[in-house]
Image (cartoon, rainbow, N blue to C red):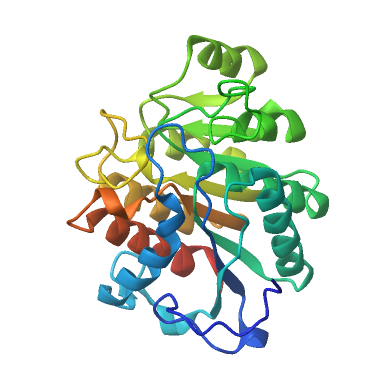
Length: 291
């Protein structure tokens, strides 16, 4: 699929139908082939778009309106069911086109493995890329039950590609002992359990560097986001997550891309998970794009 193909389905609120004028491209990655507990995140991108229509286009937190930024919703990348290797290739091909056109990629997941091919493409343009992860899980395994292509492995792959000194992990509260030891021994900027306090501390280290932000919705406590494949008690509130996005927005950073992953709407009849995801995406658009 070409990212400039016409998309006739639901689009994220406020998206322009004029690709040429867009600063960013929203796209979905409906993949959950390696889900280790509950599948269903492949339905996340579609539902995030649908519930985005309940939001206002104005953000009082940022005092900006979606009419002030231009972004294009390219729809979902058609991925081969059950084939993680081929799916990653297609995601990488798609994102490469977005980058080549000078657009900022804003991805909707899908399981967290989808972040890996995006980083592989971005590092080709930004050799000094920094990755900031907000997540409940470390995702630092070399494999999961023998499978190297797993949503438990993307940050290990990313760390080995760009160097531990360029990886920042916040909010982590689940993983194997080996993962936690690896994070410390490798030199990852590792801040478990909390998000907002350590984020404020590390902002000076992120300035002046091309930054990719990846948010797993399960960084939130299940009370705020039950609709995810691997819920993990003890997380942050939706207020803290939105405050973290605001901190990033106001810090004058060079954000070259972002994603939000692991929304599995079937497990949340209240729809609060999809709604908070849509609001986070709105704040990203308003905060990360210059307009």
